[in-house]
Length: 420
Image (cartoon, rainbow, N blue to C red; front, side):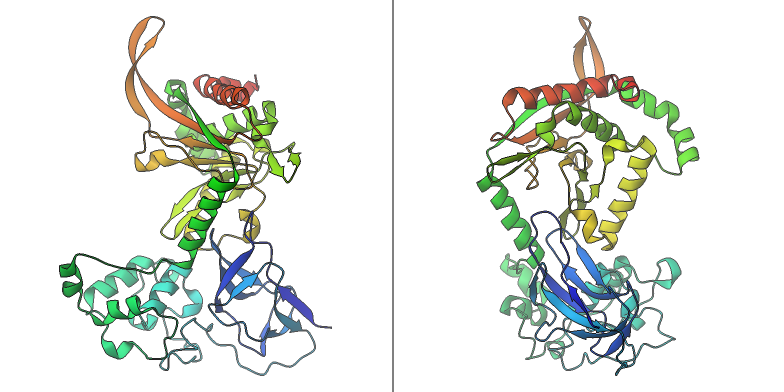
């Protein structure tokens, strides 16, 4: 009996995705949990894997570039069928429209086949019609990195008009012009027009929708991080030796937020129609910036995690986002989010909600400032923190009290251990 493969849950508020590429050809044998195709969402790229072993047949009409909906059938897997093709490298989005991009069997001598490429590297290879076997890899295990491709492009001349095919119907006029017009001429005009990527369009739509559907307000406070920094400096070497991961500031903020959210559950809640939903757990979203946009992987049940577990999960998820290997289930189910603009030097900002969540905490850069402590002017490492919240659900008293509680916990981090 055949098994139907469908578009899985893609994360909170995400209902559709774009098929980037097939990893398997029609009639090819697949194993359980083997990647079948790659989907692009507004949060991350993710592979859809086989839910059974057998011979895969994609659904008719679904080609690279097709927009698919959650729950839509992508194909079937027949455990009793005989394969009709020999496994080869995945079909790229340009292979159906470019005459010189026909699929070929994988060479054992090729140092970097398209099967081994990360999404970011694969995208550059396809956009510039490159042969990965001609690029010297420097990554672990002989893998190509994004830097390898960029260096190769810089060391070679710009693409010529012969690389622009008339059948590239998905390429806009602006993109074609960019390939056939010399860069110097483009610079002399003073204006560069680049089509907005699909992921950027969806990010823009989601941000606009958040502004239109929630009554967003922001409240601010500032935190003296002297004791956090002293504790971190005192124990960071021992912590890393014991747990194999560095002790950063994010784990302190995560612990402070999860503790405060237990006391102010509406800050951890959501509005669903005419209902208010609250949770007895905290699935903490951590905003991660990438070249493609912002992604928010989720630490499930972060309120139960130790400092070491929080740090290791943040490190793992952040790397998975940047490598394009984040699982779709790791992008869904968040109840509260932390974003850190301070890593880019932001002193103060008003973060935007991550729907359907009702609140988000913004961290900022640490700056030494003169403050008054016990009637004395002293220099302390200070950070402004901001809480944006949906005023339909959260009152001003709750939002301010929550932020004050976070401040108290960070200024006396022993409270985090004693839970007082």
